[in-house]
Image 1 (tube, rainbow, N blue to C red):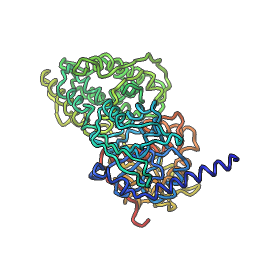
Image 2: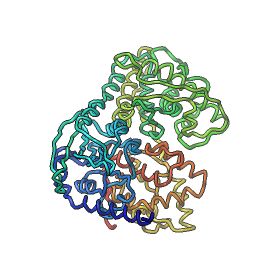
Image 3: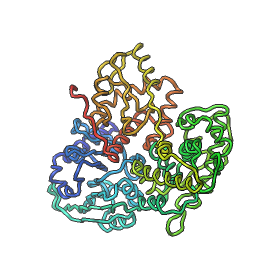
Image 4: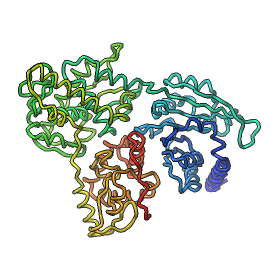
Length: 572
């Protein structure tokens, strides 16, 4: 048989298998786990989705569904059968599962006839990644075939193995049943297993609450570290990397920058940060001359963002100030933050950095200061709940400052204090992108990403794909040309799955023409995307990778913050 004939035979086999999958009623096949589905609209992950029969059915019930399927031939069949369905289909597989880097979490994960294809040596790693993707009280549903078909690449499976893996990862089996084969194979039986992750089984939120409310504090440093990490989780989650042993590592420089941005308005206003009288506001361990020079222009340090280039004194003073802040973080809050059993919560690997007069604020620069090691469960809590954790940190920090001021017989205006402690939001600015769009209109055609209509200068808006009101982000990848009517219709809502999938080609065409003709602006585009979008870990991601990461961020915002969706203009 020739290679071409063999390829055609494989395609024919995949098509026949997909047709067989589609012949089964998902309602009948999956009736056993229907009681465990989210009661309201939830986020569901279908691993090894095959023809996407189940993914399409789950999406038709109103859920946000992400389906992974490693076979390109099977993905083509899925698109053939379900071209109009509103799930997201991803080329991904266990145990690598790049989706686990996206910071998206799910109420329900489905592995229908998948686990027996995973080699035993990869199962521990695979199970751990699946558990990190589950929300507290989340459910994972698995079916195991008995007997296996070794000639199809299956490995032995058992319910006891799943039970053992669940125990090792803080979960438990809630239900285990068996059923006949719906294809009529009398010698085949299926084990149907429900694995449940307990409510906040990690204990992250109680730990955060204890640090905020109960830990002894001789200064505001402990709160500042937690809040700096919370800001990184909200603004630059793409910098976090899995470093094994259930921990992530974060460049120390980006944490130090967030630290300085939090402290700078308070120090400029001489708000006390410890019980001791610090007249002038510059006697804190990190508030040395470099920071004093930066604080002369408070707006400058608050506006520093990934991708910008600094020269001369700006570069020197910032590097020195970050170095002082990094040392303080290592020597003060990290040293004195413990679990109840006395073990340290964080670890810092600090590096010596050479001060230069030309720097780019990117991952390489931030990593040159070292790294902070954070428990993965704590990091996931900061990712998912930062919108609620930050106000608690602000409140306790403000109360500390007021107590310190009272002990020093200083009068503070509480309203002014709370104004200074508001989360920093970048200034909303679409001017640069608008100018680029207008230049393109004058030389070639550009189109509304949502409707495809040709735009003119008088009917064009620049739209935040992920709305500013929900997630302030003026990064290049998030700003897109839109008709004024579409922009008004969309307002502060997220584009739903179907409309963003329909807009994919137009969005990527806009990115290519607007940003990738200029190597400097394309480099900035990718730096911004890698900082903001956790799914991007490749050194040189493609535009397809950026779009996938955008889709995952859309789902995360919907899942974690319940932002309303936009189904598109009514006239399309």
